[in-house]
Image (tube, rainbow, N blue to C red; front, side, top):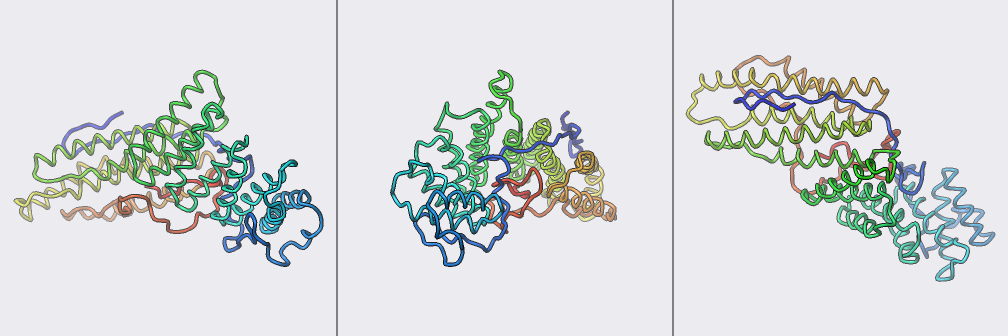
Length: 419
């Protein structure tokens, strides 16, 4: 359903939210979340070719490199990444440029990288992955290794490097399953989005969606998880949302009418794009789309309420103008409230909680408080939407990603405040 285009009184509609819990596939195997930082201040005692600190691996001096690799893998399983990193680094230091007939060098590189991920030292993890790629450029695990490296680069907000890593995966062509191509395209698109290369990002997201649709319809691959499909759709909507935000409303009145129509068209396009996310029925991205859709309506209200006012209006005329405008825009406020309520209702039904749901709860309470406190005094209503960050280039990191529950716990999950 679309909005009516009558002046200053557009009704905003959307489809009912829905969703079903899914678990996103991890690059590198199940249960291997590297985003969870068990000790953010801990750093590995070594990297390929370095010496480990004394006393950090009491049982490492005995045995062979094969023993150290096995012990390191066991330490990773036991939740001891610092000990594992020391054992893997010792293996690499002892092996040097020797042969890898038993496969222990490759296991040591990858084990060291995984240990560093768990320690939160993503630069060290990247160096370990680089070492593996340089030593084993034709390895069957290359796509997985490149994906984990690209995700570590995303953890560090190194978007150019991350985009390049995922673009390199796509050069492997027929070696990749459709789901692997979808993930690489979605992650490359995210990096391009953060770099404000919106056209390129949108093209990657569209390609990911097309691959999913074709694979599903042809039976080429049955997707057990739609996480990255929903992610691609979410960021396609985000591209339109950013353009909606940047669309100005300017005087004189003739220009204002054209700008208003352009902004309304972008709102409708973003609304439908978020509804496409909801149709993937992936609960994490359903909650994300529901939250952003509610803010979209708030932002539309703000844009119209705080648009320039002609200079020829006197004080009494301005009071009448804002009173009438507020009344005409009430359906927009009601739609924002409805969207936030539906997002919370869906989450309650599924027993689901995320940062997006917490933000939805906060936005609903804030929106209701603002409107209840309105006295109709003939001045613009205070802005409903949260203050937006500057819309120039990539977002600046404000803090390390926190450990997230359940389906969000991945090597890199886009920040809840990406827009």
